[in-house]
Length: 263
Image (cartoon, rainbow, N blue to C red; front, side, top):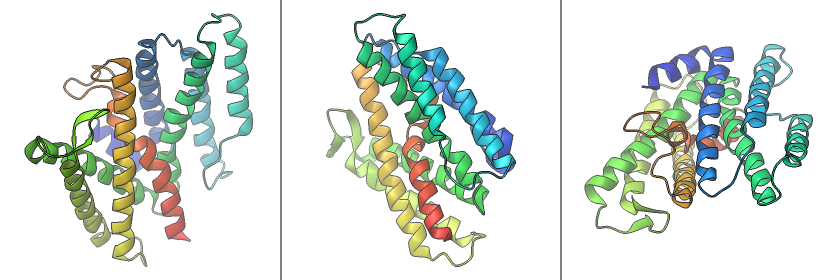
């Protein structure tokens, strides 16, 4: 369902990509706060939505004006967000105020800021290729880990029985194998000269590790909140947060890996 929009956004980059990232961020933030509400934690939705929109406007126009060539997060923006949230807290309850503030700030950094690394990858030399690869490998790892685990891992050793009882170690091996296979395909058709095969395979290993970690982190949040999916936004596939959970950690790692490769 999302694939055509993602392909178009990666291809065109710029405002189209930032708009898609903003929509995904707002949807995922809303789902995250709904999960937190199950623990009686009241986040500050509207201020975070506004700060997220401002943040992506800043990301886009930094590239347009050629003022940014890498990740930069204006200190004034995070400082302003923190002070706004602290000020708003005075007009809310005293109980759980630490949890309310902490969850709000965490959500802001964890979702929109981490997801924005897609735009920073796209702005690199050969950025469209690298961004396609990072998304494709993350989803290959996630998809084949799921099907491999379902087919061969039902009675095998579990990856994290407490957090996610259905995820098996053999499923992770399947995801790793197919993400390495996808990395080899990208290597064969790479427009980037001078990068050896081992760098693509190493990237697949690193990405697979952070993809699994990102998936487990979101599973832990959902288990703590007592929900199966982050929402029913996409029938049969859960919500926006379910779709991007692995990308939230793999995109920042991918950006810095690609920066090192291009030096």
